Image (cartoon, rainbow, N blue to C red):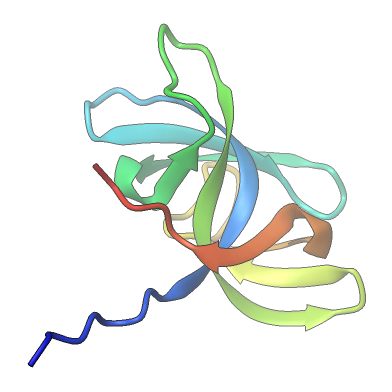
Length: 107
């Protein structure tokens, strides 16, 4: 009998900028809240999907995996995987900054 493949889980993703971190398995993420105020945090690279590989200290567009805690109108309250340097781990963002999809397969 063929083995059943588990269905891929969907996750919420926040649009962000990604740049290399201090360590090989870490990246710096920069994003904005619903008031367009910036915040940044260090996260493990497995929680980010950059559109292209960040190199040479330059940032690239990408997506950060987040948890959605609530939504009202055009705003969504999210929990970040780590606390940003500027505030705590929960942030309100514009709903348009989020995507809900399956993570890309890692090679």
